[in-house]
Length: 98
Image 1 (cartoon, helix red, strand yellow):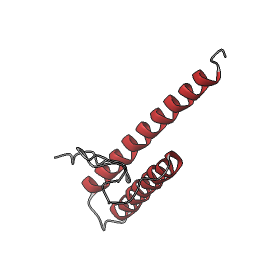
Image 2 (image 1 turned 30 degrees about the horizontal axis):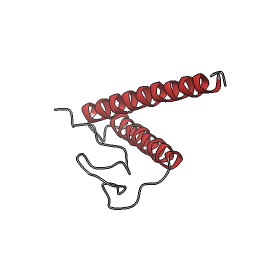
Image 3 (image 1 turned 120 degrees about the vertical axis):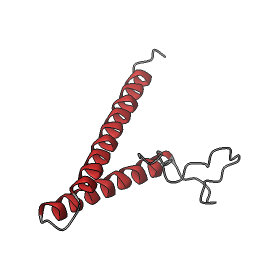
């Protein structure tokens, strides 16, 4: 079974109101959230690499390594797609006639 997608760290909990995040802290800026998401992506990729190394050495499960590699690949694809959308939106804003 595939686990549900977790919200980005620092995003409001579903149904929450106000400026506090799911952890109870006041939310940071956009840059902080992007950095946090990239840190999470790096962690997922490092975890997948570790599981792959264990499986190659015969110490881990191949299925767990494949699942982690697929998750890392999907997270990377989503991150690249979001970055491309953000760049396109920025370019559109910069090309607006004043």
